[in-house]
Image 1 (cartoon, rainbow, N blue to C red):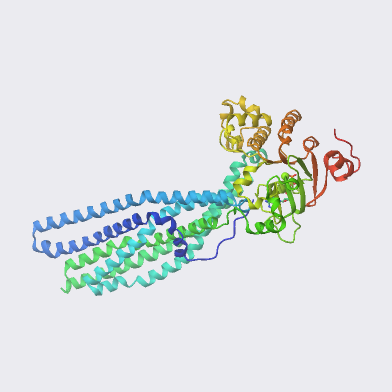
Image 2: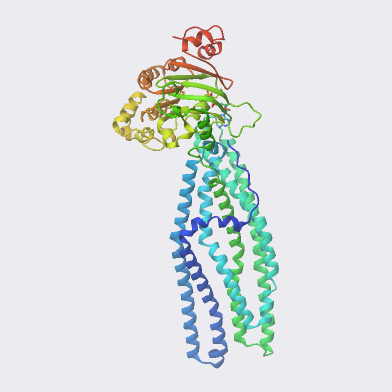
Amino acid sequence: MPTTPSPPEPRSAVRALLRLWPYVRPVRARLFTAAFIAILASCIGLVIPLVLKWMVDGPIADRDPAGVWLGALSLLLLGLAEALLFGFRRWLVARPLSHVEASMRADLYRHLQRLPVAFHDRWPSGQLLSRATTDLMLLRMFLAFPLTFLLVNSVTILVGVIIMLVQDWTLGLVILVPAVPVLITCVVFEKRYSGAARRAQDQVGDLTTVVEEGVLGIRIIKGFGRHRSQALAFRELSGKLRGTELHKARLLATILGVIVTLPELAIGAALVLGTMRVADGSLSTGTLVAFLSTALALRWPVDSIGFLLAMSQEAATATDRYFEVMDAEPESGRTAGSRAAGATAVPPLAATPGAGHVGGLRFENVTFRYPDAPDTTAPVLNRIDLHIRPGESLALVGATGSGKTTLTALVPRLHEVTSGRITLDGADITAMSREELRSKVAVAFEEPTLFSASVGENVLMGGGAGDEDLARALAVAQADFAHALPRGTHTQVGEQGLSLSGGQRQRLALARAVVGSPDFLVLDDPLSALDVHTEAAVEAALRRVLADTTALIVAHRPSTVLLADRVALLSGGRITAVGTHHELLRTNPEYAHLMSGAPAGEQEDQR
Ligand SMILES: Nc1ncnc2c1ncn2[C@@H]1O[C@H](COP(=O)(O)OP(=O)(O)OP(=O)(O)O)[C@@H](O)[C@H]1O
Ligand SMILES: [Mg+2]
């Protein structure tokens, strides 16, 4: 299993969140309007204490019932206006923000499709899944709530403090005393929480990977009775995640403790001081009421800062995790380096399709090393020279692990050659667009992957235009069983084709490879799961296809090898022999050994 990519360097949350701007830009008008409305609503809330002051010092002191009714009515209207504005704000942001989330997710998916196979080899799928789900959800929540309310609450606190200072500046200063320790706590909290948030979100990714493997590998787990070890791995990871979440909760509890308690103490002190001053007549009752109700109205904006900061940190982490994937370099259509190589190594004539001697599929001095492999190890493929002439089919034989699959993956550019080049009819594959390349080359891999779609759709993924092509391809691949399925070629195959037998899947994958009548066919051991009779039937049909296709076929068995015109032997990263099956059987002990299983030297003709 690939390992979790390295954790990032520490960075500022604000800088991380600023990267969201391109996505937020289209909805900025609504977002700003919503923030403005929220500020307005919040400030209306702050007018309420002033009305109270007017009521206490005016109509209540004068025992004027009409004035009290008027005051009550205005309080009611103010409260109503505040509630309506907050509701309006929510309505304003809901739609645009789900749009932001959807477009970020669409971009991520598109990008994942374009990232090279080497990236997917390196990244565990759970990490990618969790970024596309949990992290994006965190971001939407952040944009909907903490982003606005960090602003709104700051403005509210500022306006509230000014109102209190205007009411009575000594009491105002008492209330302000906790500001410094609260700010320091916030800064310390930010630092600590950011690390914990990152850990938690990465652990969610790891956990997703384990769950995914557990579900996809359910057959193996059941078959080998590995429930316990799988459950153990799961428990261990979820225990870790729980630990991190508890750590986050403790941090949050600490900051909440400080930012709730200190202001509360200050309010208590102001209450005592204020009451004493009302008693000695230096402060009006109404002012004290207004002052305290303002202070109480500010309680929520202050208390909420803790979890608003926490959510912002999580959003910053989610943004980082999102852009770690988005920043990965996608497959380039062409590569400048190879273009240059093409320009120097081949005369211009060679680029003409079908140009005589350079036609067909050609490996020129191709060396390949997996991107993660240390430089000290020998390359998997070492200076390979191989020429498959137009219309010819070549079988590739080699011991297991010798690099056959790797070699075939280079043709559709699932991996890039480390050095050297591959040409199709004389044209360097790195000089053509991927669409062009992949329309010329069709592949069937060892592992016949199918998708949750109908049989027909799975096959037609390989190209082809309709029922006729489909029927022809199914016939070639001896996959006529598809017609006998409950709904024929419209039958849905389960996830990964697991509702079909191994041989059935293999034949559908083969049909997918031949359906588009490609110029070049690359088959990685396409007949391994078939019984001898089906194999013979597929071979007979395949022989007709191969007659006018340039093909590279990885083969383990003599019967498959015999489909090809010539055979190449891959050994130690090099092509050590090329010839017909019979030639090699006679002259090459390693080949004879691979084909017959007999000790080298005792070979005899296989057929
Ligand atoms: N994604 C990868 N990253 C790093 N090394 C890899 C990767 N895939 C394969 N290898 C290594 O490259 C070597 C060749 O593997 P490859 O799959 O090409 O062998 P093969 O000839 O197809 O074997 P088989 O006959 O068993 O299918 C092996 O040593 C393998 O460990
Ligand atoms: Mg292989």
